[in-house]
Image 1 (spheres, helix red, strand yellow):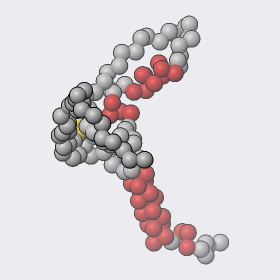
Image 2: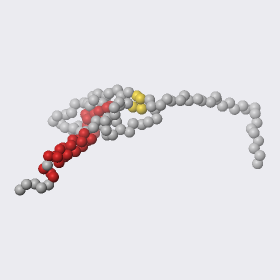
Image 3: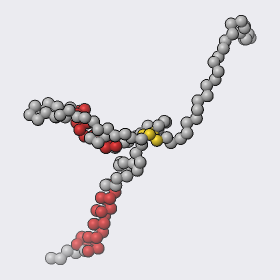
Image 4: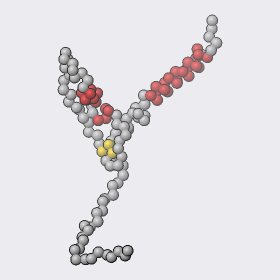
Length: 120
């Protein structure tokens, strides 16, 4: 018996394949909101980084995290070797010009002067 639905038509097949491809591109986009920045940097002043991918700060982030959580630390058959972190140097980025701080002169209180009288 022949199919009477649109599932097996060539146009519907191309439409489904296009939807699959677009959703795959959306999920695997490297510079998405959950991915990496175009140019990764740490702010100098005023802004705290909200999200930094783990591979940005070191070359072996999974090994470092496993050693911090103690994963495979009690394995007596094949003990895990000591982990040496391979840290990366992340540049600093300034987003605005910092105005210089202007301090007033030191306050000098003279001992030979009377205070200002306050009426009651």
